[in-house]
Image (cartoon, rainbow, N blue to C red; front, side, top):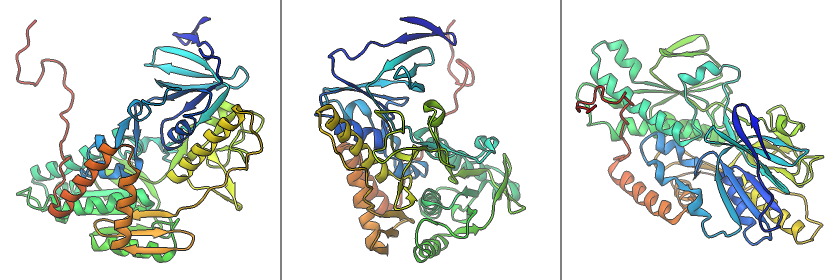
Length: 448
């Protein structure tokens, strides 16, 4: 069947070509990939749809933003990671809706062709994107950090700020270029602030002649009473102490009122800054409206004990976009939750297809939280352990290297970390040239 939808071709895809139940997975992140792998031996056809062609290890995005690692070191093509899984098809497209009645997902390809892909089972693992709490105009001045594009933009902003500071003669403008404001004192903000501080004080210290990068002001703003609010107060204070040793200024209990091209207004005070980074909050994609399902106050879809949407048999929501209560508390939006939920749903579908019933409800096994605060220092909190310091940092490094998606990533990250550790050099400090119209400003003659 061929229709027209919004000026683009609308095609209804055929059912599975091999008469096996079709499982459609939306999102190739932690949860989606875990679900796909759990379905490897199931008698199903799996269709994995993502608008990006790569799997991204988000916990190390801040290191791309601060020039420690390059993009390819923390990401890998999805097709490469699942190339040997014969029952899986990967499609590069963007899901724009779900038809619950007809059991089809609506997918847009390259902004032109739209297909309606039927499914027997649907797993929605779409993740989160930054929220500016109703102030979306902040986005153009304060990028978030959720994608490789975000990380590259932030890296360019940071490196350009130092270059501009080197060129200006006005002391106030120079100070503005060398002032970096990070909004949000969660793990992402803390890790980014620490890495940026070390970059300024060590990596760049002898690279400039007119400025001293070590004199850069790095300000971390947090609206709550303390940074790392999800950790114990003791670990939060240890992290704050370490940040201050690195030269980071921490301001808590302040709310951002405005962000523009010249800086930030927080707590009624203007902070002149050329580089503002937003790590203050995230929100889910609008799955609730797609499914006509109940959502919680954060906009996450409320799911049942088997991670299934009530009233929508065979439709599962996992990861950051699922509201799941355990012991009366909502599960956090962290990678471990998504990984465990993806594996659980994959196994649940495998069992149903094989005719097995009686699966136990999902139960999250909390393996703890970790945050690194610069070189040689990290904090760890589990149900029974509270730790910080050098050995915790070594544990953090080992876990993160082993969690990377491919052996090639592990080798390259391990090698780069060793180099950076002993030399303080960061190799990913290239600023991409701005795009120019063909034949203009290139210094190269064109032929007509």
